[in-house]
Image (cartoon, rainbow, N blue to C red; front, side):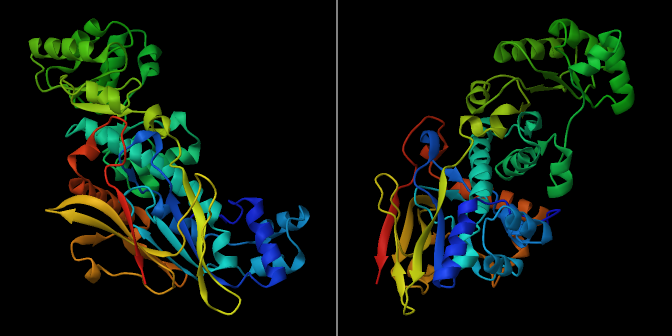
Length: 442
């Protein structure tokens, strides 16, 4: 749970629509809203769903208390009748969707929200702000994890993001393959492993680099990692081994031409007898820089700005659209936006990933004009069902929230990545790795 209400984490027009719908009698019509991406950003070959567990907890806190109602009253956002409705607002509908850590493709029904118009419309901004941000980070982090292979990755970008965004970014990166974060609040809140030793300020604080190294080793032991590029790297390496001995845990390089410098440092360490001392590199890494270091004697990576900003794609570009509604006589009507380049597909959907010998071949989406379940796994035995129930009658499934939900999402992502075809793992710009195939269900 969060520290307070999330009810005003929304856009004004959602409440003005609610206000008007309460007046004209459409507010209580049952509706199906769908959150999806029309395309994958930046020519990426797959996207990764992240933020679902956070969203479920935020929806629990979507309550209009005295402060929120007073603000809406003072700003004359809605009328008195709507304020009364909001005072008792609770989401009592259902939400299904892709598991956190799942891969997605254009048109994937990532989240399906079912309830009255009044209940579901006000969740639009909250759902999009969480999933657009976290999925963008997770997608970028997954690409970095692919580039890193078996080498560990640490997220260390908190200083390049808003304070809450930094915590969310650390969580998303961990789900898709990062091993630790420098952010302590992310560690406390989500159970992530944390890491970190010293910055250049530590060396500059002391009269000499040797004083700084000795003090750090005295405090943290010889297993620590010493930052060796505050002054001269070659001298820094020699000094680090002289101070800590050949059992020094690691050295960190934060500047220079990393492939060249890493090779020189490895050679020097080996010549000094520190063959077990690890090399960590940082310095503005992204997936391409990590891939370029694949043949270098690097043991681990620390990534900052690039991961917390989605490596140039800070939003996943998802939308939240009404796809089915109850009409004036209680029947169900599929609805869709028909705007040029912004169209949607109406109707309730079920999603499956077709497989051939364990490898994913397509995103199969079954579409129905009705409200009932459109398809089941039994009808698609050669495919994996992608949607799970996340919220039932307003109650979120605890399996997807909290630290345990993060661990489950990380495990699920590792499973999903093994299913993807080899072409999905390339870093170059291309079409989505899987085609999206729609089928109509009578």
